[in-house]
Length: 155
Image (cartoon, rainbow, N blue to C red; front, side, top):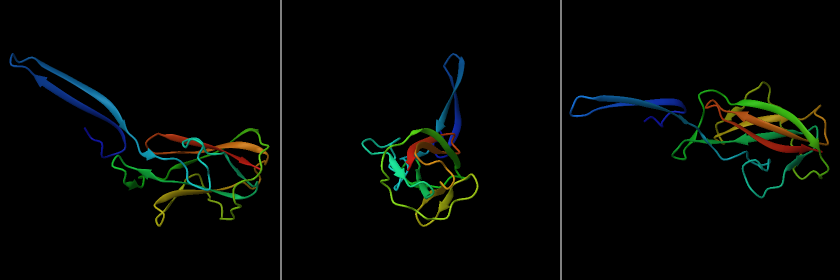
């Protein structure tokens, strides 16, 4: 069984008894990355219990960061860049801003970039032009097919 590479795999085997009867079989399985959630400044309410939803100032740049691990817990980099899943507008927001204002330059394109020094993926989401006063769902799609979301608000 191959668990060293991410993705879909199939293992097959056969057995022959003393009478010469042979039986074969196969099973498919998947190997995924270990995803522990998004990092601060986002309170990852989708994966961590007991955290308040992050509320950012509308028009700011929100750093969306995460790491991936293999089955042994080692940090790994994907073969291709993770896909940014842009924002989906939710319900209205009444909470106060509780996260710092970020002014990092926005990330262009539709993929996260690999930060070698932090051993993490980063997408700097520019909320300029995004309507404040609402919750938004943002996320990432990995090359193993997994999709992860987090909810946050813009005030």
